[in-house]
Length: 151
Length: 204
Image (cartoon, rainbow over all chains, first blue to last red; front, side, top):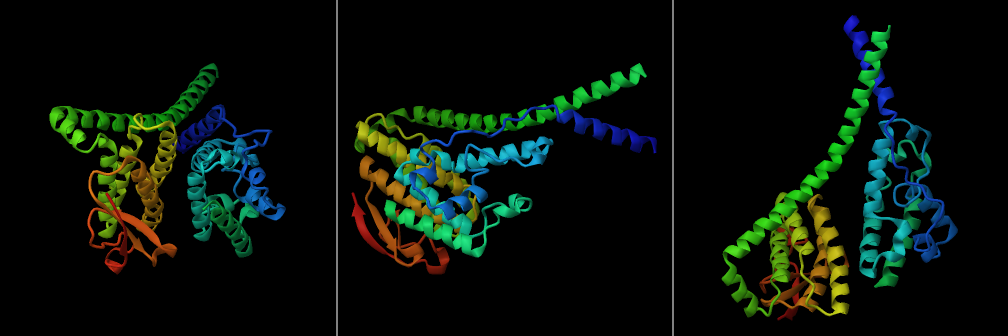
């Protein structure tokens, strides 16, 4: 019994302890001129979908959930966001060359077609980010048209 | 009581430190992997310097660029792994190709060519990296664009050996790839449709 108490205490103290480790927040007030939605003048319904389902991890501004205040969740999110932005940052769209845009668009289309994105671990809590079949079709059609206009 | 509080503080400090350490360890890991590639580079350099004269001779024979030829060789090895439906080998070779793509020496080209090559390499590296961590279906998707990148590279760098641009009308609305042999061995279908395709262009 005593040992259980000690372990519980250590865990508790550890949990409290890691709350003091700072995290970098992915937040920005301004939308750069190079942003995908600005550059392509994306229509309202599609930009709403992309912002809701993609922009948290694929732009410089994340709308954090309350539990981001809690470690180790915050680290987990920080990692994911970093990885997401490395792969594709919608805010930097105009900085990509046509070749790269073409590659990114291909990946966007295939990731959505195959239900790889948005991630299950993300939509588990962000129910609003789940794309319906109709949403997916609209996005895929839009991205395909954009890709064809590049070629 | 005082003692208890002291222990608590110490435990807390210890745990937050170790938590921070865990986080650092992660970053360190990535630095480590960079260091390994760095080492690989130097190993390769060693190999080169051992056979220094041979390399020189070869370079003269093909008008300079040894690097783009390395890229082509790695690309063909990767292609052969895909022809053989070998996912694990393709992963490995994708990583090798990503490294050689990153090393292309572009200094002797014109400014316009340099920026074109930089663009091609940046894109190609990403595809090669994805190939190094995907299942075979995705490897083939990425190989399609990678093939276009490498073909565009060859348009600038030229090639030491004769290449065949081959074309499979069935894969993803029609898809090309490069080979050193005239005979068709389809990397997009492998054993499923080994001989699907035709030579659409010869590149000297």
